[in-house]
Length: 375
Image (cartoon, rainbow, N blue to C red; front, side, top):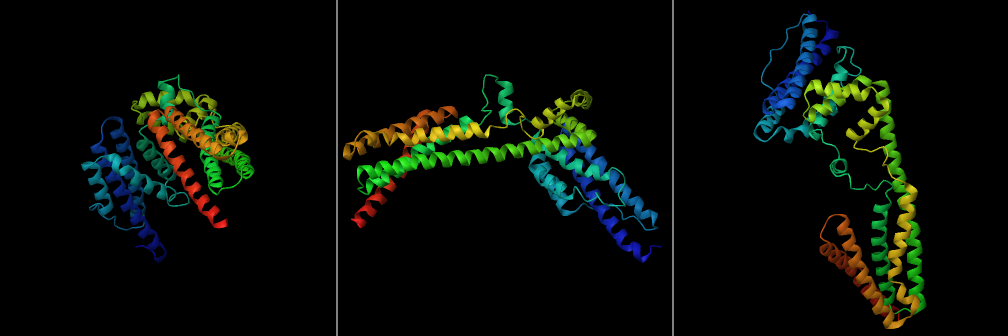
C-alpha cells in the first residue's frame, strides 16, 4: 500500500522506467543496423539503459506497487529506429545526441538514483558525440599527419595577411574611385586615399588583435577545463579515450591498452585529449600580435596600390593608371588566394577582379552623382 506522499515518487519512477526502456529499445535497434565495434558500443549502451530500467522497477516493487509491463515503445523511439534501419544510424545520431545532452543531468541530484547512474547519463552524450565523429581527427590534423610537408599557420599571420591585402585593395580602391568620380581635386583624392589607408590599417590591426586574442583565450580555457577534468575525473577521461579509439575501429582490448599508455603521462594525455576531443593543437593557438602586424602591413600594401599614381601625378592620367594598377592587383591577389586554397588561379583572380571592380564602379558612379549635385 503506497502512502500519499509516495504517490508522486512512484509516478516519476514509472515515467523514468518507461524512458529507460525506450532508450534501451532504441539502442538495441540501432545496434542491429550497425556492425563491428560500433554495434558492440550500441549494445553496451542498451545494456546500461536496461540496468537503469531495472533499478526503477525495483524501486516501484519496494513500495508494494506493480511494475508496468514493457509495452510498445513510444512514437519517437519507433520513428528514430525506423530511420536508423531504413536510412542509416548516422542520420539519427545527432537527434539522439541532442536528447542525451538535454537529459544528461537528470540524475545529478536525484536521491533515488543508483550510484553511477548520473555518470552513465553524462557518458552517453559523449559516446554518441564520438560515434557521430566516427573517431575522425580534425581535417587539418588529418592533412598534417598524412602529408607532413604541409605547413600550418601557427601564428595566424598568413590568414590575417591574406584578408588584409584583399580588404585594403578593395576598400581603398572603392574609396579613391568614389572621391575621383566626384570630380575632386588631386590633393583631396590623395588625402582621402591616405586617410583610408591609415584608418583601415589601424582598424584592421586592432580588430585582428582582439579577434585572435579572444579566440586564443577561448581555446586556452577549453584546454584548461580539459586539464581540470583530467585531474578530477581521470577515469571518465580514460573511458573517453577508449571510446574514441573504439570508434576508430580498434578492438576494445587494444583501445584499453592504448588509453592506459596515454593516461600514464598526464602531459601526453592532455595533449591527446585536446587534439582528439577538442580538435585543438596546444602549440598552434595563434599569435594576436603577429596577426595584427600582418593585417596592418598587408592592408596598407593593398591600399597603397591605387594611391601610387596620385603620388606621382594627377588628372586623367593618374585616374587611368590607378584603375589599371588596381585591376592588375585585384587579379593577382585573387589568383594568389586561389592558389593558397588549392583553387584554380584564373577563376579566383577573375572573381576578385569582378567583385572589386563592381565595388569601385558603384562608388565612382555615386561619387559622380554627388559631385554633380554639389557643383
